[in-house]
Image (cartoon, rainbow, N blue to C red; front, side):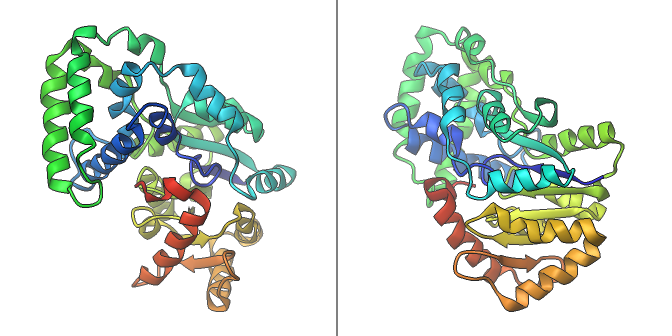
Length: 329
């Protein structure tokens, strides 16, 4: 039995849905970039009870304030383009009898239409529950001024250079000012499936299938995935970083940088044939040969002392595939 679990945004679709949703209102894209950086900073300092990907809870007051509808989220999932090679790879895996899963930090209204298009059963999908219509009822009109003022302040912060200011201002907003309002409960209504919650979701799938993590392959690319990648790699499974950033690549078994997800079939076929030691040999051979243009750049991570060169290749191709979303953690 071969089991594989994909992250959604990055491996299967290039778009960052939360980023695109925030762009539906003026200055929303810039606001999201700052809050996304805040998410990275909280994760890196290991803030208690905070998980990477909780950005999707932090942006909730702004989505509610600007009247974003659940139907708009679902529409994005129905029409978004897929990562090149994703359809072909999923089809190949199905034909070979693989069990395919998806664990995504994305809102369910976005994740389910996409995984349905790819033919991944809904019971094999874990994602963030987002009852936006109910959440909007918690937002009181007398608090609109606070959100408007906060937006005005956030757009004056630089997500690349103002880490200290971002931490100070957003700590005060989220954990002091907002908590003192009636809508302070909004944040707690959303529990994004990121970080350890991805590990928990994978463990639930593992229990259901009766197979330990050592028998799983997982594919991720960003800060929300690193705990899942690390858990599977340590268990002896196959943790693959696809067009990854600096938060995901170091915790992986191997990296693949490519404009096509289908290039992954090479290592998945090796996994079929003989598990991790066969993948080890195949990847090292490909690593010596090098990639071709923007495809087939493989790296075996566990024995690599310096991943700087690999990370540069991933960064370059990540920008080609994910465009604007590539700059997010």
